Length: 120
Length: 112
Image (cartoon, rainbow over all chains, first blue to last red; front, side):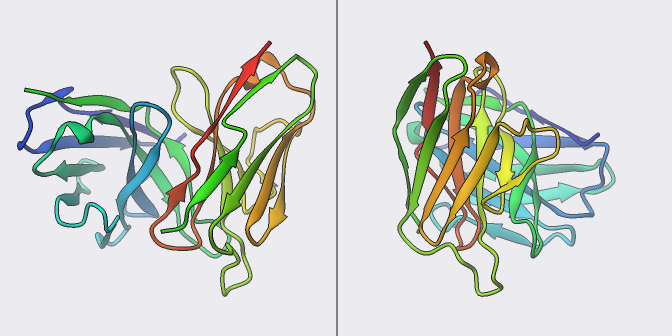
């Protein structure tokens, strides 16, 4: 079974960088696409970006200047870095598998999420 | 960006009641390839989101058939035929037709 697990600091200071890791078991990240989504306090959800099986990336234009998604295929992990964070980046961050194909284009497996607070 | 508007924002139902959630898109979600990439998720309290329905009406494996989806173009509906206690949580529609992928505002289902 595909399983994803996020990890990283729960508290980040304003202007610093947020760095999270998604560890995947049961499936290789060299297949399909792998993304990051965040849920803000309240119900708003935002797609942040994804990395493909080949390592190419696509980002939400709203974040494009601050975001980077990379991977380590030897560890079957992919990573999120978000630079110059503000309190508005306080959210629960999820990693998920994204099925990209004519009969898909949706997230099917999700991690449990990690809550990140931006505060001094 | 495509805006998905969900109504109602909150829904209160008794066990066994049938309910519907609407998702209206600011643009048609019909892709040039003929598919409509509109999906539904459920986030139960304390859990991560779970895929319920994809491509408007296709039930994800393991999801009870009391859930059904319908619609086309810009108007879509999720129906629960006979709410059960485990159905409480927040429901989201999400579209993958137009970049960037966007989510609806969410509908919270409460059990009376």
